[in-house]
Image 1: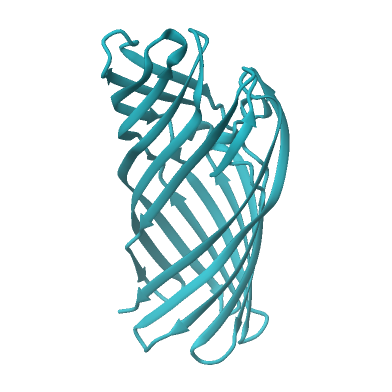
Image 2: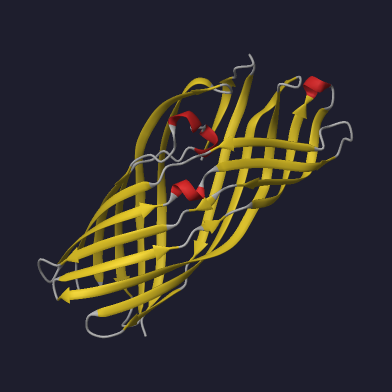
Length: 294
């Protein structure tokens, strides 16, 4: 996500806050042409996720607040996607996909909690986890139209089931190295994300027999309720712009890559820990894929 230093906290201190949440996904897939009109496909998504957080680690206010630092909580889970495609005629194709929800319980982390306000100093917890995060269930419908041999226009409507994926997020740590510290360190954060409709459009152009250029844009309204906004999970991005290229290596193999830019967005919010604050967010992603035809 991001990192902020030298922040004025509501407790009258100046401290640091950061949240680094990373996801790597490997998605082997297979497709089958049933006849001249119908095709089906499926893919297995193996997802690895990790998180590191610092939440005012140098701040401790009696029993009211204890800052913390979380390291190395990870998750490895599998999910799947199914798809079907119908070719109406050489110029028009319809398609639909279903993606199953993938829970991402992040476990095996270490957490340092600052209990200086209680006279205990920094306490290490050896069993830290974050529960309540998931990649959402998705249903997508698409249409592709070829006005000519070299050009392709596409449009997609995507329903994302965030309301079932992010409800309540719980940070929990146990096994402290100080017997006088609380046996369990726990923070429960409300999520209550809303389902999201995403509208996407794309353009493809065959530069030559081996090279295809791509461009696209999609929009989905921010799924995070204003009252539950937090810099630690600031998924408030709405507009995505993409540019890509695909190159045929030979008759079987193809290499594809592209950039995805999430345009800057901001949102004002207020809660007891941050006071009146503003989230600002943008992101840039690199995508690479290699595929083979049989």
